[in-house]
Image (cartoon, rainbow, N blue to C red; front, side, top):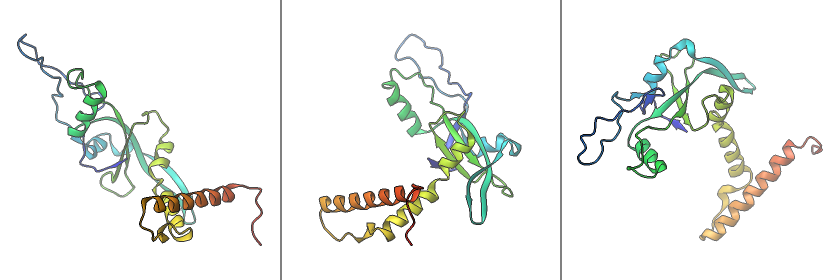
Length: 192
């Protein structure tokens, strides 16, 4: 998922600590004693030389490539805490540890700082090339949507019912799948 550079996170090795319990009242919750930093700050701290070049696509103008780095972080903020608590079964059972996420950063040559950031739940030992290909897949999605819209009539529906719209979209999707399979099949003869 693409995220902004100012989203906050802790480094992967950050550990929360709980203050001593006096024995009265509820036990104190574990908290991170250091403030989370921005994703941009975490990426810059890893150093420009840690970024490695990766190619995600070859097109008519040549290979599309840039420099990338994979980091493990612990996303911070209200949404991350709420999600972690829900996964643990509630505030009473949560140990205060935010889950790890894999951060992919892009730092193009000539830029002063990284420009693009993606968070994923894929393991940090996933090949960088695979993570880059998934992150840069937006072009393919936009191309397929444009083909469905202009070539197959996705935007031609003029009905008023949900059921009619659903039938229309289903037929357009089936036509797109058929054309994609025809295009990928090496045995199919091209039309003369």
